[in-house]
Amino acid sequence: MQKLKILVAGSTGYIGTELIKLLTKHKKVKIKYLCGNSSIGKTMSLYDKSLKNIKLPKIIKFSEKLLNDVDVIYTALPNGEAQKISNKLKEHNTLIDLSADFRLNNSKSYFKYYKIKHSSIKNIPKSIYALPEIKNKQIKDFKIIGCPGCYPTSVLIPLIPLIRNNIISNKNIIIDSKSGYSGAGRGVHKKFKNQNLYESLSVYGIKTHRHNSEIQQELNNETGKKVEFTFTPHLSPMFRGILTTIYCDTTKKNNINTIYNHLKNFYKNNEFIKISKKNSLIGTNDVIYTNNCLISVCKSKVKNKVIILSAIDNLIKGGGGQAIQNMNLLFNFKQSMGLK
Image (tube, rainbow, N blue to C red; front, side, top):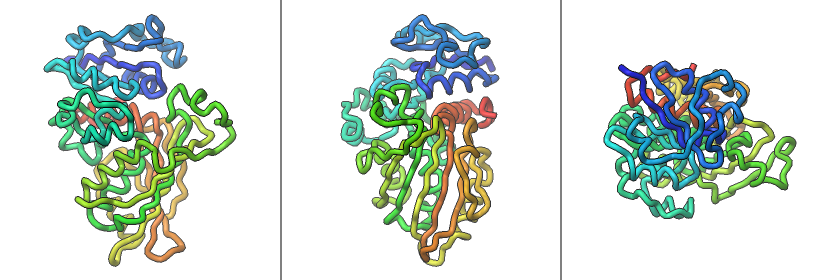
């Protein structure tokens, strides 16, 4: 098989840059085009010095004609832009989107949370919310891949197997997530200009954070009922990584052992999901620069309540790495290819 020809639109953001770094190590792809707006004519080494000695095309402006000459289009663009590109796709193209444009299966929900009228409603049924460990067998049937957000990735990987099998209650789930500031993109310093990003911890998006929508959608899909949860995100004084703490109630005779054994069994064949020993105190340092999700099941001092810890690198497992994992599934490559 010839190498897949790749176009990356939105090359210079934190996610786009991380994606490109990973793609340069993938044996089955060739980066044909890098596209941007304010960065046209520049080289990627200006945005990441580790790319200085790697031969990459200069950044150009995206145009529809480029689609004729590529197999896979990765979009790491602001919300709304991937929709426009999806309307121009050729028969041989696959779109892998890292924005929120194809995460929600309802255009009204998309408008509610993102304040953008969806311009490609016809393509929503042709897309899939592609959490690879959960949707792996279905992903091959789609040409538009909506990669999950970073917070939802850390939340849904531990919760879905438990919700699906009624091992925890679908009510009163408390989700507390802390992310490195790279999750807010290169504009983070303007967005949070009055906060000391390097020395302070701050809460934001209480009740209104956009990732509520996809967490709700996917958990509801697993039960057929509305799952009740509270999600609170925090910006932490670190560049990368997410640590999510989930407080949940057990059902029937289930306990920490049941939950641990179920997650261990559910993910036994998944290379990137690591289940720590019970009551392990994990952190982001255990996962940064990897495509892993590390999970720890911990006992609470409250009866019938369990604490689940989940750690990922938001730029890899919550971004570029997960996108490549989805590509590997689509084209029958080994899931770990380019991700070691």
